[in-house]
Image (tube, rainbow, N blue to C red; front, side, top):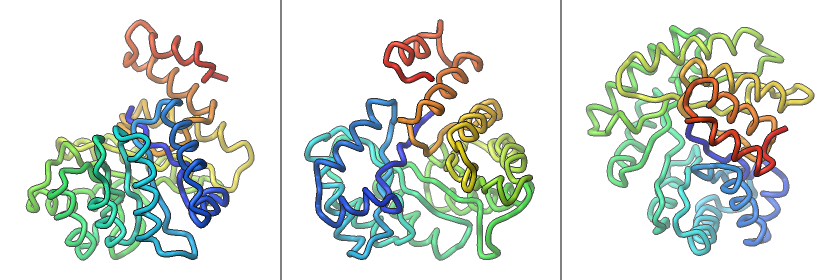
Length: 266
């Protein structure tokens, strides 16, 4: 499973403080910790500050690529101008995700050409002008519409990752099952992949790591290809390692044993 580390997000108070103070050491520490814990990409979200998002995005990417030139990044913003800024600033040797497009045509029209031009991977949220869907079937219908658009735009669907939008089970108990049902149905649309923002499932609950880990295992069994999560959480790293073994994705349990030796298991 491909892992995008979620910790460099300005909704977290310490990250917001680091961005405002231009504390490069703290940003590098967070990125390095996630990479050591197994993150393939580092998510960068600086939308929630009192500063200028474009300047903040420019600064974070410049810091990361100067010290970790091979870093893979996920540009996470509702502002297409911030995404465009990040794409022009990044000169590292890694790969790029854009997070995200939706089923809304204006959003696709702004983001898709950038994804094609810079040859990025692309996350697509299964929501549109009507908002967030409730059922797996509604999610699939939106995904179909997005697939048609990206094909017309010349984007390689192998690099398209659908996020079927898991919602908090504390307030919407049936949504976890609808998400799980949506995974194989969306993958049945063609050569596309699936992803989730894992921590949303446990919002509002105590011991969130326990719920996140259980759900990650269930989603992996359903065919989930990638997740945005905190790889430094040992509940999650344990679930990932064990799931890979049980799904025959870890030859002779080598990854599990390495995780144990690295003290990443509970």
